[in-house]
Length: 72
Image 1 (cartoon, rainbow, N blue to C red):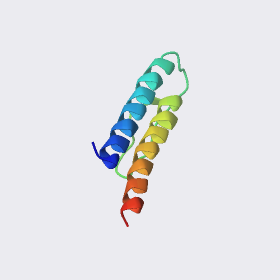
Image 2: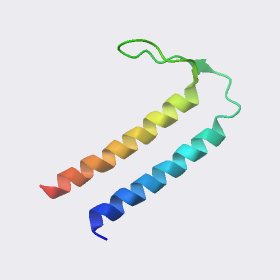
Image 3: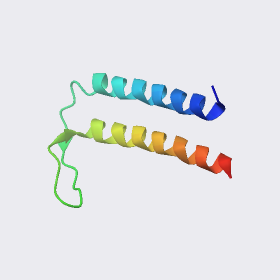
């Protein structure tokens, strides 16, 4: 496999494991909040889920940016 595919696969596996651990970790979370989107608000979600999912999405997007910069 090429280096780019290996890097994307490793990133996807790592972030999927983090997402799975996030669901295990928020089982007893009592603090909840709504996220204000441009159109409307979301349902009440645990704050730990909001922070954790933001980190995971940022990690995925960051891995795509590094791949794009290496091609130039």
